Amino acid sequence: MPRILTGNRLETGDVLWWTGSDWSALIRDAVAIGDDGDALVASLVAAERINDPVLIDVTGTPGNWLPTTTRERVRASGPSVRADLARGSLSTDVI
Image (tube, rainbow, N blue to C red):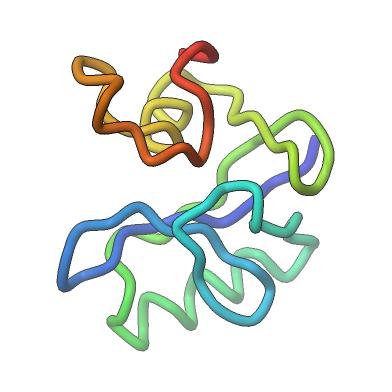
């Protein structure tokens, strides 16, 4: 099962997704992380730029990722109680 990397921006709390070279607010921009995922997470923790970086399991294909857990689907789509505030990164229908 593919894994992607997510975390939160320290300054704003925004949910971010690793693109392979930087961070994006959109899950569709995320890239699958290979065997070096744990080393990447360790380097990000040491750099103290991103809060709580974690590798998560997803299904789908690049550009069309779907987190396997409800928690991560909520993080990807935005607030579950106010669909009008959703970021459009992932439809709230998948929650």
